[in-house]
Length: 553
Image 1 (spheres, rainbow, N blue to C red):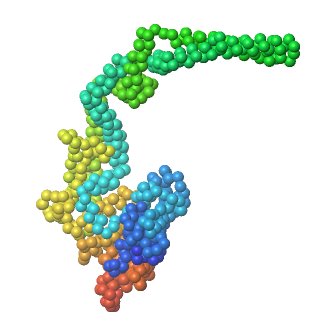
Image 2 (image 1 turned 120 degrees about the vertical axis):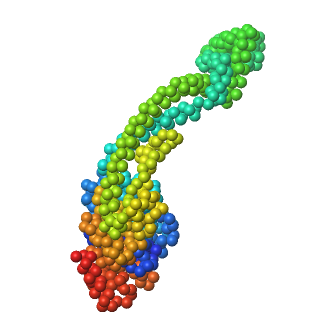
Image 3 (image 1 turned 30 degrees about the horizontal axis):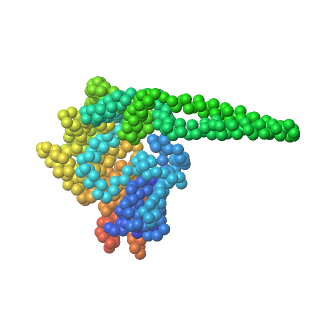
């Protein structure tokens, strides 16, 4: 249950801090005193998106804090959350800054808005002002039935979700194959593949050939340098002849001075090394002698490969890889028809499985609705809404000529209402008045509360469009509901206020809203004010005392 609410620096609230009790907590006050601001603040703390932070903060930052006392064993969220849950005392805080940015915390630790919403959906149900108009939105009707039958329909929902997921996976593969089956694409791929196949790339041999061509294409320049080098070594005036003469002179010097022996030995070594160089250069020279026809073949191959690499903007290795990729794509496309046949057969089997599961879910929903309808009719009759007929129209969502595939099945549900006996039910949004809508919504909320584990419910002006005996019946219903749920109710009706276990009054003092807990005497005076206006008379006080005794007796 919701134990405490604290709001600081939010719109016209400087600071409010209140403790709620079990049972029926009532908030009353004049129009404009700030009742709707409290609901807005609670919604923000629960993870609602902030529209404009600059308009809700007077200075520094706004802080909204909710303290819940819960049984953790009942929370699905508790099984997946890794942070501290403080043994069932949950403190939810939202801090909103002037920039419009905000952060949320759970027991002092940062929590994402998505995680926060998952958690708070299990803690509290807020029915805000005008929210009963959401009942006119037909897209919410199936959600209401599914919420009411969540436990009974869980296995059917699981079967439908799994069947829909398997079917969608096959459909996605089919679409991918169909999209890749463009004949023009296949024709273009085959054209490129034929062009590359004619070249017959042999990566290892062709890369070696490219190196050979690079060398042979500069043969004339290479031969000129080789001949010049050999001439410098081996001519009559070449380096080798010069070294022979040098050795001869050193030998003459050695005959007179042995110190020249090492020098003569170094010259010998140089002559040997130079002779080796000469022999190797002669061998290289013979390597560059080739048949012109052979060179033309190599040159033709080089030109073919060069044009190919230039066209595709790739080196030879990348071109070879591209050719392989082309062949793989062509094979996949040519195999497409066979695969499509297999996938279409698989899709038909999976659709049948989905349809079977969705049909079972639909039947389950119809059975659930029969029980739900009986509960809503029972509650609305006790709310002085007699003679009506509440029903639903189950229709198929379709894709083409067959029921639609989706994780929620193929049902499209809208609520129907007949306000007069003998008149066929029509869509709720076309026939229900404001007072009827608010009571039907209350009936739905009460019916849901019997199967919903949520402990706390907040109602903001659920009494719209009702008065007199109907108001009395609504107040009794609120009192009954508060025996097993904690209720926080904002109301203008004295009958509902008189049923309070705890009464708060919101009023504006010096332009700021204050939420004041009322003791029994002050609560009686507030009910009297609601009955007779600002002027309190003894008659009004007596009427208020009688009404409180009646509603709480």
